[in-house]
Amino acid sequence: MNISDTKATLSFSDGSPSVDMPIYKGTIGPDVIDIRKLYGQTGKFTYDPGFMSTAACNSSITYIDGDKGELLYRGYPIEQLAVNCDFLETCYLLLNGELPNAVDKEKFSDTVTKHTMIHEQMQFFFRGFRRDAHPMSVLVGTVGALASFYHDSLDINDAKQREISAIRLIAKLPTLVAMAYKYNVGQPFMYPRNDLSYSANFMYMMFGNPCEEYKVNDVLVRALDRILILHADHEQNASTSTVRLAGSSGANPFACIAAGIACLWGPAHGGANEAALTMLKEIGSVENIPAFIEKVKDKNSGVKLMGFGHRVYKNFDPRATLMRETCHEVLNELGLQDDPLFKLAMELEKIALNDEYFVSRKLYPNVDFYSGIVQSALGIPVSLFTGIFAMARTIGWIAQWNEMIADPEQKIGRPRQLFVGSPSRDVQDIAKR
Image (cartoon, rainbow, N blue to C red):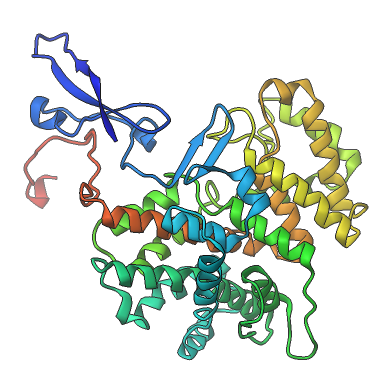
C-alpha cells in the first residue's frame, strides 16, 4: 500500500486539538484512513458495528466492486476464470498469486490428488455422530480433528508446513463432505480415486457405490467445478474474517478452517441458496407466483424474495450470470426443464427480470438462486448445500490465512467496544440486596 500525499484531519467541537491521520491508497478501490494511533492520541475509539467502514487488513487476493458488479481473483475477472480455468487452477492462483503453466498445473493437481484420502481412524469419528446429524456439524468436528492426525504441518511460522496444510485441506474437504453425506444416508464410504479430476472425484464419492461402476458426466462435473470456482473466495466476508481472527491468535490451520465452517453455517451467510430453494418449494407451482409476488411487494406481509439482490453487489452479481448459464445447461442435460420445481424457478426468474418493481430496486437473481437449483438437480440434498460452499471456500480461507500469517503488520485481533452497562459499583451484603 502507498501512503497518500493528503491526510485526514479529525477535529473536535469541544476545543480538543485536532488529529492528522495518514491516508493509504490501494491498487484499486477506496482509500483508507489509518486510525491505529487514534486511541493513543485522543483516548477515543471509532464505532463501526459490522465493520462496514473498516479495513481490518491489507490483502492482495480478492477484490470486489459492488457498484460495478466486479469480482477479481488476483486481478483476474471471475467471468474469465470460470470459463477458461478449472477449480484447481483457481486454487493455485489464489494460493500463489499467478495462474499455473501446464507443468505447474499438472504437479499441483497431482499433489492435491495424492492427499485426498483421510486417515483410516477418522472413520470412527463418524460413528460418534447420529445418522441425522447436520453435515455442517459433522464438518466442524471432523475438520478440526484433522489437527490430531497431521502434527507435521502445524508450525504456522514454517512456510513449507503452511503449504502442506493448505494442500491437505483442499484435498480432504471433498472426502469429508462426501463422507458426511454417505453416513447420513446409510451408504458405505467411497474411497477417492486418483484417476479422476477434483470435481469428478467428489461426484464419484457422493453418488458412486460398490455395486456398480460410476459413469462420469462431463456436463455435471463442469457444473460443480464452476460452483466451486464462483464460491472460492469473496474478500473479507464473515467466515473469512472469522478464519483470520482465529488465525491471529496463532491457532493451527485446521482449527481456523473449522471456525470458518462454523461461521458459514449461519443462515445469513452460507444458507442463502438453501433459503432460495425452500422459498420455491413454499410457492409450490407456477400458478402461485403472481400471489407470491404481490406478497413480496407488500411491506406488511413479511414475505421476502430469497436468492435475489446482494448485500455487496448493488447492480448485479457477476457470478449469477455464469451460474445461470450453468443452471440451464444442467437442466437441459438431465431433461428437467419440465420438472415442476425447476419450471417454477425459471418462471420466477423471468418475472423478476422484467417486473419494474424488482428491476428498479436492482433485485436481480444472485448466485445463490441458481446454485441451489443446480445442486438440487445434481442430486445434492439441501442440508449439504452449505457443505459444498465450505468445500469451495476452503481455498479462499486458507489463502487469506496464509497471507495473514506472513503479514509483518498482523496482530492478534482485538476489537474495542462502546460500553453501555453499569458503571463501577460495590457488592452489597446479600441481606441488603
